Length: 247
Image (cartoon, rainbow, N blue to C red; front, side, top):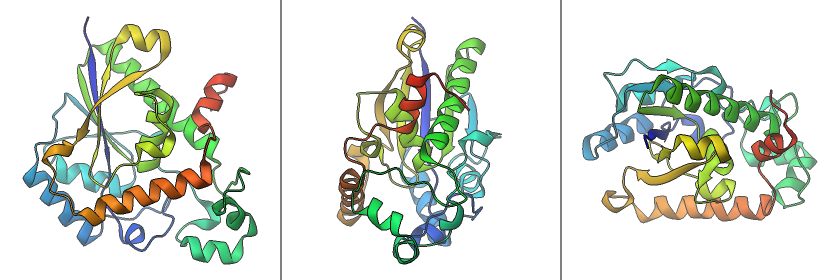
């Protein structure tokens, strides 16, 4: 049976990312360091090619696809953009915690849902991203386009894979580094029956990466911290799917 391949890739870093700030709707370009890191990845590793290229409209994603796939002419998909952090935009966790007691309780693992003031709640964000992903998958199948590259945000990738990915894993288990991601295999029959896709490889392949140990430690620490804060809580996209709601 014919299958389809989708490659999900996270954008490179901005100055805001490097300073540990919440960057969602703020349309920052890649930092110099972020761009240099992507160029090194593109030089040292073979990124998967595809028949169609799609991208979040945020500048950091457009910059990323321009470096990794300079010949591509990406289709911009508005609903793949990052979450809007509202009043938390551009602030570090320490700055937010000084201003917002709910944020302090959330970091401490209270389990209560927290929506950024004047921002987008997690369930709405996940539902938006998941709806966009479903349209992409169904468009590939309907048009018989065998492969696609999607450059988007870390939160979008985690939402998609927590909702549809095999093997099953928690939201933060799908955290990936800038310029990295996952290759997915879509089997039409399985997609129609169970809305699932197989994550069969990392981008670039883990075995070939010349990563610093500190880079991996940072990602692992972030996963552990997030697990403590979110442990056992179902992702917003699944909740929306099971209740039959869609934005």
